[in-house]
Image 1: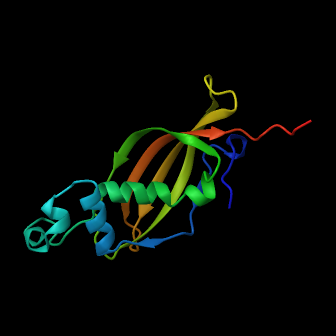
Image 2: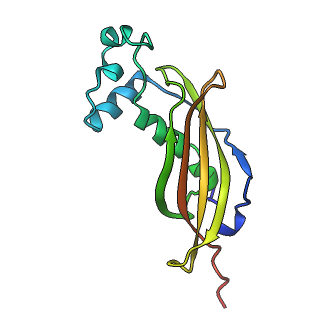
Image 3: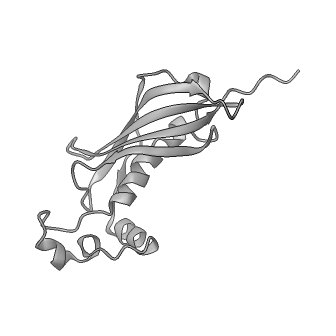
Length: 153
């Protein structure tokens, strides 16, 4: 499915994405290793048993990537020029191995780009929820979105 163009976005519209993903131990282990993060809270079950969580928790940067990644197929596949920035990232509840995450995206605002005449800037808020409907992440970001191509004469 192709992503949406700048003109397609409506402020305050909420996308409830159907795609879900169960986080595995391998996801957490590989992501932590690939990003050079040896935090025992992510990797050492015996250490994590003594934490307030009582078990390992998933690397929060993996959670960020997943919650921003789930919407891509529906919102921005092939129609984005890139992220302009992440303005506010929060993790109000931990993600544990075995949690199944889903996401929703709200369009916060949009405006034409002054630098890129073929694009506009859309501000999104992505919310990640687990299988118990607990919010595990909120991310506000700005994306540079292509405008609909002008028909060739």
